[in-house]
Image (tube, rainbow, N blue to C red):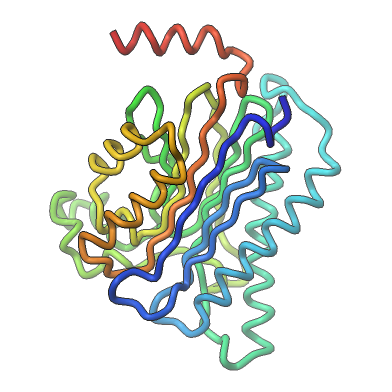
Length: 275
């Protein structure tokens, strides 16, 4: 099956209850199997411009790069598959474009954005990540965070300066330590993962995970995994019902049963695990 026939996408975005403007940008591309989210930096000028630029550049660069990539089995790739190198390259090009636009337009100086994207190919997913937007995976009804926040708060928790249970109350929870548009070069985290039939992937801005506990996100996805558009809208509504202090965006993707080469084995394995 082609990528567009084996991945179902859905998305939703909202300014939230407090903010007047929505600086989040989201996109999906079923032709190449892409889901991407950028959260314009709150408190900086033109955050919406930065996030929109990031999305535009990523889509353009990836579309061009993927046309040149020959199919490669994941077992024969050296360190990263070509698709993973392509998502990293696209993120770096987005960083350069944001800096270029900011230099030419005084009203855009200081703008920045997070960026998290996932590209489905063969039986794999390639992930690129900068900032504190997140990618989660729901597998066998268990939610797992696949990205690590580039934030001051995460650094404080890892250093033992703050208890993880107190993190939600910290005034530093929205201070990112890495973003596009801040430096000439940007460190992009990349990783590859196998995809399994029935997997659901969730991209979200921090407007969701700051307002809704992971356990509640997991429950919502488990209950509504058969209806992705409804699940996306419900997650946004949950964030707003809990205060809606920030823009909130979600992008969902579900891997259809024929998406992975080991589909029958993994389906049976999941059935035994659930018993």
